[in-house]
Amino acid sequence: EAQVTQNPRYLITVTGKKLTVTCSQNMNHEYMSWYRQDPGLGLRQIYYSMNVEVTDKGDVPEGYKVSRKEKRNFPLILESPSPNQTSLYFCASSGLASGETQYFGPGTRLLVL
Amino acid sequence: KNEVEQSPQNLTAQEGEFITINCSYSVGISALHWLQQHPGGGIVSLFMLSSGKKKHGRLIATINIQEKHSSLHITASHPRDSAVYICAVRGGAQKLVFGQGTRLTINP
Image (cartoon, rainbow over the protein chains, first blue to last red):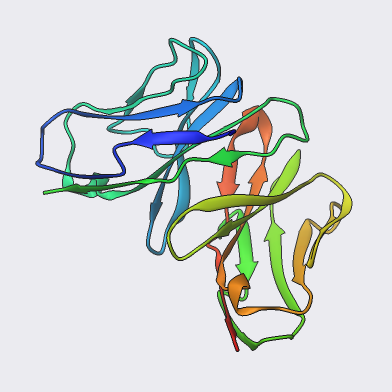
């Protein structure tokens, strides 16, 4: 089954404690992206990647890091989480052709205390 | 002003009604997406459009590139269509910019 998986699905942590949210896809997609969703602000892009070792900033990259060492994985790293990073996070992937559908992961709900 | 504006923000209708959700954008785009987010939070891609019209079951999406406007229509609406519908535009470099979403509630 074609899918994008994220782990963990729910996470409560404290300010400053480094964490990683994993994202994996089994569709051999070149493009992967991270978004956060906040009430009143909608979905906003954090980082995206066009292929292995190719990453670029989205609209809200501050406080986040990503890496793309393998095509299937695109982890999101919060080196020193802060309460304003409390949010619902989505990973997504697609091919690069213009007609490609974007597939979303189930979401990770993060609470930073 | 947001680059992507959706209207209405909230819409409540009775089962069977014809639904229209609008999306206007202010930037040049290579494609426009319509997404559906159910109360559980999961997001599903409904359509990707670069021109014209697409239909899938009871859902129809249209886009007018000259007017920078897209509409999502639902025919014979059903309570299971209740969800948040999100318009997103793809500009250069695969970046997606999202509208605020339209919360649709269909009452039986």
